[in-house]
Structure formats: structure tokens, C-alpha cells
Length: 146
Image (cartoon, rainbow, N blue to C red; front, side):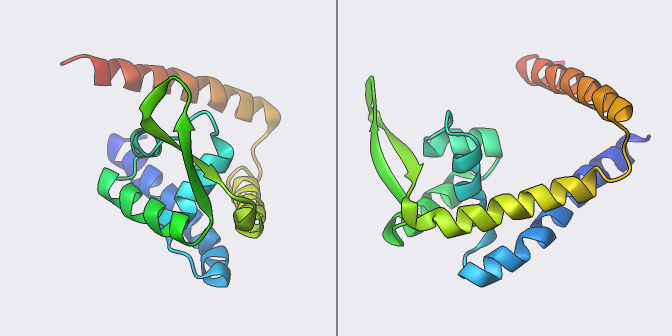
């Protein structure tokens, strides 16, 4: 696989995921970024600050800020203190977001099933191993200059 093919596949994967989430976005009249923030918090409770959402999920800080504010105003997120650091604000999904989260989790599961359709358990195990190694290599590249 050429690097251009790999990069195109990565972009296409996100486009396919976004397309499969569209029914949820339309049903709840919610923008993709707001949906992504809600789902990220649901799936990754250990990362609960706006900065962590930006860094880990890769959403620009200004977009996280704008969408978090809208989600708080809509009652879908709440802010709270981070124990041990008063300067940080923890974000949590509210009960009101439950229907969005439920439909979102179903959309994510459907996407994953379609993405992995026809892949044997053996191949899937090999892919996970390779993917984890590539993730380690990416982190190393990001920590070093060359």
C-alpha cells in the first residue's frame, strides 16, 4: 500500500463514519462536531476536559469551545470541577443526552460491523497488532524531530 493510499483510506474512513452518523444528526438536529464531542465523552470518560477532547479526538480548540458551550446551554453536557486542579473544568454527558448517545452508539456499532465485514478473526487479530505498533511509531515520530 502506498502512503497516499493509506492517507486517502484514513480520510475516507472518517467520511464513511460521518455518513453513517447522519441519521442521528438529522433526528436530533445536532451538528457533527457536537455529536463527536458527546460520543467522545461517552466512549472515553477518562478524557473529560475540552483540552483533552481537542488533543485526543483532534478537534480544533475553538470548535470544541463553541460546541461545548452550545451543548451546555442545550442541557446535553454539564461542567464540573476536576479534583486536584481547580483551573480545569470536567465535562460530562447529561441524562438528557441519553437518546442521542443510545442512537450514536448504535450507529457506531453498525459502522464497525460494516467496516470489519468479511475479516476473519485471525486477520483482525493481526490488524490490531499492526495498528498498535503503528500507533506506537506515530507517537515516537511526534516526540522526535526527525
